Length: 229
Image (cartoon, rainbow, N blue to C red; front, side, top):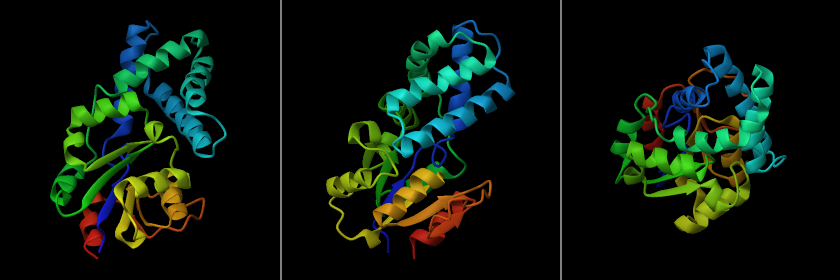
């Protein structure tokens, strides 16, 4: 039976796209950039995913991806790219000002609390994640929280998980399960770390990387069938 449940935050526990849309639209108003349409948000989201995957592959540093994504986005939609750095700084704060739980996530976490050691594992920035975790109350639910910016390594790098295992005193990896929505970050990371993985895949995306996955679910409600094994 699992003793440690590692939970990804964005896209698994919290609806990241909802926070992203709130932050982008709020700052578009603040910077007098006009309306940010749904199409623009889709463009930005695609760019954002691309840049985070470059970080996961160690091709760029976190500061490079955080500002670079906005530079590319602004150049596409015709906004002055010189504001990218200040926009990103305010974006980190604003991103943490709105939280929305993924369906069933909070109830499941509350039901698991006390039964398992709950560990948050996230690649999000320190500023955004600490605000979101506090606003959502997740900081009171999780037994431990590991933000990659503070760890000094990003998922899926083995160094990130080695740090978590050391700090948590985990010696038997059979007792650990990671739950996450990212194939390249959570599932690849869990596989490289030698622990069981649960891919939260509500949109039934294909496993294009052929990454070995222990479990795949499209509804968080199915978690109980897994963790009690």
